[in-house]
Amino acid sequence: MKPSRSYHEDLIEDLKDPIEAQAYLNVALEEGDEKVFLLALRNVLEARGGLSKFSKQTKLNRVSLYKMLSRQGNPEWGSIISLLGALGIRFQITEKSSARSRKKAA
Image (cartoon, rainbow, N blue to C red; front, side, top):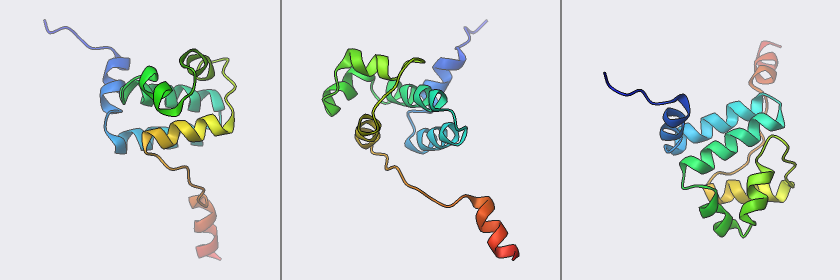
């Protein structure tokens, strides 16, 4: 029988695709729970080269980065923006689609 891969291994493989990673982060952000977003960001960082790589790129201490992205993490806004920038992802504010739908209906 072929050995099975874990969900986490499959997820990390999928998140190597920049489009998948962006969609994953957007869904996590829409959940409205910062801990869900931090875990998603950690998974994307892992998939795209690991926390050590991004620690060097952003000049954030590696140990601090691990703590920041843990369940108890409390990162500063600037750190999140630095990590997203290092991933090549831009943070953007858009109107909720439901609000657009209400405007069109009116």
